[in-house]
Every structure is written in C-alpha cells, then in structure tokens.
Image: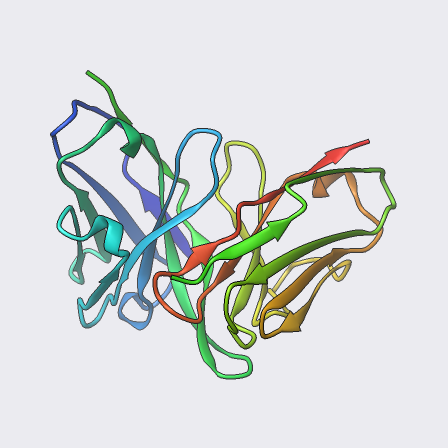
Length: 124
Length: 107
C-alpha cells in the first residue's frame, strides 16, 4: 500500500538545523511531488512548500525562504526537508504528504497520503 | 496570499446530527478546495478534493459543495468516529493555505 514513513523526532537548540526524511513506498516515486506541512502544539496546519520528486523543483512559502531546503533522492525514494536557523516557534510536528494530481474543474493538486509526522522540539 | 476563513471554530453535536462547516476564501479559488479530518495525535486524512469529490474510502455521509469563495463540508448523521477537527485547504495558488480548523465535539 502507499506509505510515507518519516524519521524520528528530534530535540534541537535555537540556531541549529534539522533534517527530516520522508521515505515513500507503494507507488512510482517520480510520479508525485511531496509537500511539507507543519503543526505547532495545539495549533492548526501550515503548508511549508513542495518538491517535485522527478524534477527536484521546489515551491516554498515565502516565510520559510532562505531557511528551508527540500531535496528528493530517487535512488532511495526519499524526500528530505531541512530547516535552518531554528527558532523556538519552529517547535511543531512536521508532516510530509503526497501531492496527487486530479482533474476537477481544472487540473489541481490534493494531498492524499500523509506521513505519520515528526516532532521537532526547539529548546535551549 | 489567499486567506481561508473557516467557521465555526468549534461546535457541539450529537450522534445522528447533521453538521455543516463553512470555509470562505479571500478571493475566488474556483473549486480548488480540499477538506481534511484530523484526530488527536494523528496525521490529517483527506476527505474531499475539488470541493465536492469524495476521496476513495470516505463514507458517503461526508459531502462538499461550493465554488468561488464559499465552500461547505456537510456530515450527515454524525457518527462517533467523526468527532475530530476538520480543515479546509486551498490549492488554487501557492502558498497553499489552510483554514483555522473546526473542532467537532460531542454534545
């Protein structure tokens, strides 16, 4: 079955970097992009950006530009999300989700399969 | 950025009730609207895409409607497993943006 398996939680100090992995299985990796979504404790969902698994092209939210790098490794069907210069308010569960192309009133994307989430805690 | 305003932020309902959640976009997004359900400590799950298309495996008591700037998620005959938080997401333009969420609680 289609699955996204994420790496384990981490504790980081302010100013450090973190790299989260998302390993895909059960589908053709290069056919779908991967989005990253985060959720601070007790808060809502926030889309961070996405990467095309075949092209490696990325599109990220402006608030993360300069701190966020997403990469795709086709040999291992794995996508990575690196966030640098961590701040206390980066404490959150980080999810990867598969971008699925659908046609409904136009060509669009949805997020149809999600990883289990990775808790990143930023604390001194 | 497109702002998504979701109402109400929470509601109480009983088993068997009909529940309606609304999402309003700050500009027209055609039907590029998705609905997700999230249970505590779990990843979100897709319910509806394209404003009204039911994702595979989702019970038919869930339905979505709307276009342009106004969208609705309806749950007919609420079941115990439906108590959760629901989010809308627009994928019309980046950055994709979520509504603030609606928590559906047991009355």
